[in-house]
Image 1 (cartoon, rainbow, N blue to C red):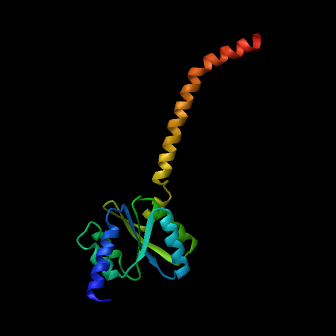
Image 2 (cartoon, helix red, strand yellow):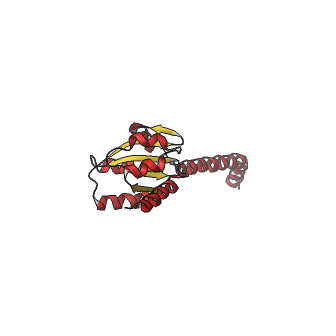
Length: 167
């Protein structure tokens, strides 16, 4: 790779990381091409991404940015998983790491300005995603409205049932 290609790769990595809420550093020790392809497909389905890059290029990409705290995690073979929703990438990576035990370890992560440990990423993966939270909130709002309508209509319904029984 010549110097211009490296510059392009670094700028591409910087563009990729911009606007992300979660960046997970993983160590893919013995991940096969097929497994990596499946992981990328699963990440795309969850609006997340996964890239393998040289540590020197990753260090250059995060140098002087808000992601600079990730530099100590960039040792050995490294890859990054990222998403705009802070839960999606963590869920997919943790699921993949559990299914393929020993093939991938989570080194740590960056989330909205703070460095997370591997155990924090696993805890984050257990939380419901933003879409799940929205659907739960919507379900609660709809249920409350339905209960109010039933409460208002119940006295009239009782009168109608009594009149119907007497007729």
